[in-house]
Picture 1 (cartoon, helix red, strand yellow):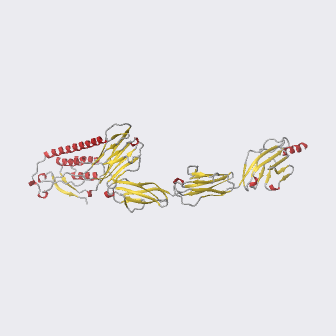
Picture 2 (cartoon, rainbow, N blue to C red):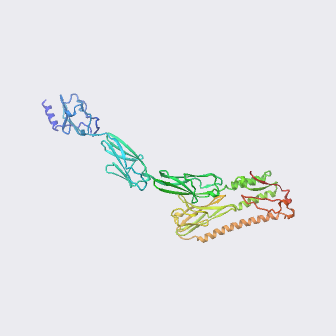
Picture 3 (tube, rainbow, N blue to C red):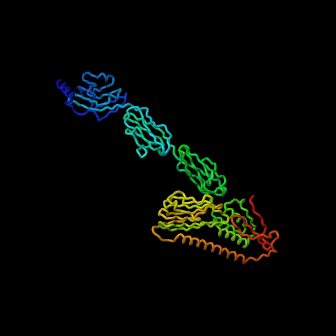
Length: 564
């Protein structure tokens, strides 16, 4: 007995203490909640002589043969006498601190343990507040303040479910309570969240932030080429908050169309030109524009229809006028009712075949095309010319011509556009001031290495459409090569030689045909055909063939083909 009393006295004074009987802490509890201080001891064979719990040097409970409890903890604690575990209920903030347990077993040294308890108030009513203002990109600044009730340990900010980090426009207060956004940007808009937490509770507040900006990234969605008679719809889009108002101009003239879609019910030559869409933001008071150059589309390739014509001519039972009409209709993509064509029904003979072949030859010798050089070499710091010449048909009108560059990286860049109404336009780029269009050729002054690439010359005509030719520009360091004047002279010489060769071939061809023809005196011409002229077919317009009495065995039943 004397030994137990003495050891208890030593234990209470801090002497004669053995192993730590509490796990490492701390323990966390919520106001009005409960925590349990669980010891690491197993129930002994004989009960402990004494179990004592204290808080800040004040005894909570001392349990021996009887329990002595501090009145402040009455009805708030429960003690497991077998293990020394203590439950503390109805927590208050003042319960935060260090707790000590001292256990004196029936045999052996006293055991002691210490644990820290942290009591937190639950977090409630979390909200994000910001000044009431209309925010405009680049002009306004704002801040967001995260407020809540309870014991706040941390505040974490996110935007659109991603962590919000400090940057040139984003800064935080010392305790992360407030985030400053200055100035706001279009990327500033979104949903901001503040996560307020402590070890026993977490609450998240959210707020949507609107930033008025734009219009940015304005573009026109629609075709850049259209066939005569085609319906065309152009849609204008822009990034803008609030949504932008749209208006349209055609070749610099107001169209009175004030919505995002511009519709051309039937495309005609008068509709060729530049369509300008302007987007306006009525809050930011800013506007932005873009231009689409609408051209006539290229006609279908004639070679496929030429093969159809030749194969049909091989069959003697095919009526030649049907084949000729098909050739005209397919090569021009025009409906039959638009072709004023006089065709003579011909019997199968060598004269009929020769006549149709001569018509095809005349059509092909006058076909439209764009003449360019496949490759041009330029030298750093010098001027270079990319020649382009359009070999025009007799009935075509050149509406515009344009130069585009496809860089080695695959980017397509508009270099210059020349329009019969608007003149020459050079978009803003590092080439502006260094390029010019002379006639249809492109001149680049003081060539740089980044000027290298594939240049496309596009000639837009009406009604035939667009024709293209590409030139590969190679840029080298050093001097050399031909001068601009020399290149132009070579191109002109080549084109002149080609034209003379074509004209000479056609002249010889006509002479051979005329040699086999017998002169026809005027007295043998029918009275109904007197005064008529022999006319070569001129595609795709009117073709006239006259007959005489001497050819009645070959030609008969002249009639006028119309599609009513």
